[in-house]
Image: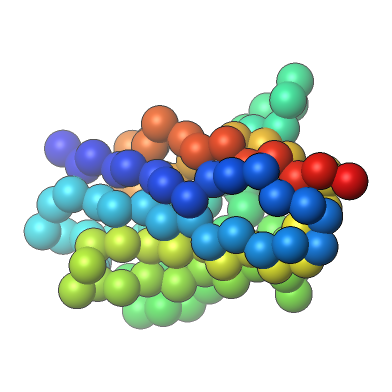
Length: 111
């Protein structure tokens, strides 16, 4: 079983930056794809970004050029660097891997 624990969510002004972290349990972390999803108020959960074991990345169009996903296999941790934040980025952000989910971390962007 995989356990995922997100951290780094906060209240930030528009244009600001945050870095989310997701610490994962399990010895196979380095072998699996990791991802970040988000759920806006009243909306369905949506994919933000993924990173494969080989470091290949995918970004949703609405974060391209602003967010960067990365991983540190030595720390079993995946990161989401979020720059140029907008009020519409306000959401609960979830870490995902192999159909396991973290508990989520709240990101609030004020205008």
